[in-house]
Image (cartoon, rainbow, N blue to C red; front, side):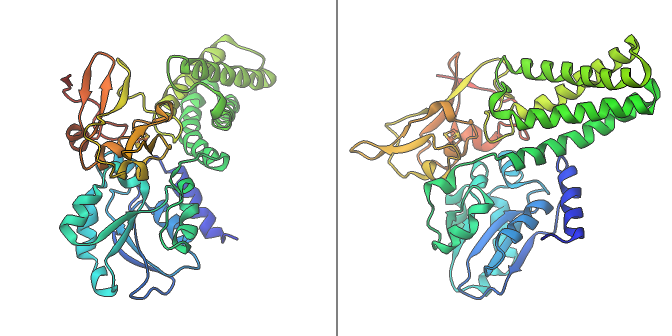
Length: 373
Ligand code: SF4
């Protein structure tokens, strides 16, 4: 059971999750670790550190907290805020090497878009492996001695996590809408508008699997959400004051603005949908140069969607589920042979070197000069 302060810190961190919230980087003890205990790494987002520590309850481990700019691991790694430089820096400065008798470091799988495992190994002499994608699998992963099951690599997005994200969006959006509406329509109607909007946001996240939130049809979801929020607010307001066209117009505008903000998140930063940030003008896909592949399979270990698999007598990697690809770039970054790249419909390509340099995603750079092939 959580203590009230623990619930309060969860609520604070969840409501403010849109913004970086840093805790001190360095080495932490979890339980009573000794020289043989495993060493794990995470980013210095307060909520992440608290969750990793909680997930490790009952285990003895060393936890290295790297400077990720106060951002969660996946976003930080994708946006260039958590790189191999940050991992090397905390490995060297934390004193962990003096406390353990081994040189084995476990990285979170979702750091693979930004942390190049091979560079950490070359520069530090530590052996680096990937942990599971999800914290709930961390205890079982450690109990298996660091053996990764296929299920540990796959990202999921269960209802409770979707509700957390809904809360994260609903809180600032509805507060803003209420503050804007208040002087225009008075506080009872402003409260009706804010509550209606929050209900619609929670509804969208609950039904995420079945709603189009990616591609051209996504505007059905956001347009429908704005209409529903307007209708609910107007009904509540109508019950209080009688219907008025001015109030209706204000609710519609506020709902439409809130849905536009929401669309930024849902069209690119959930574990189910690929980003639309770089596909606004042109669609792109992951490509594999099979001649370059040597079957190292680093890519298979870091893919959060089981898109890749080893196949054939020559044991090479193949893209077996292209429809599931998030274009997260983890496989591109980790491939030692630079065998992966992204190709746009018009022939332009984004090579591994460009991905490593520019982090083309939501929190990284949005556009780069592309080559042709
Ligand atoms: S195959 Fe797609 S989802 Fe998997 S790691 Fe590569 S870019 Fe990411």
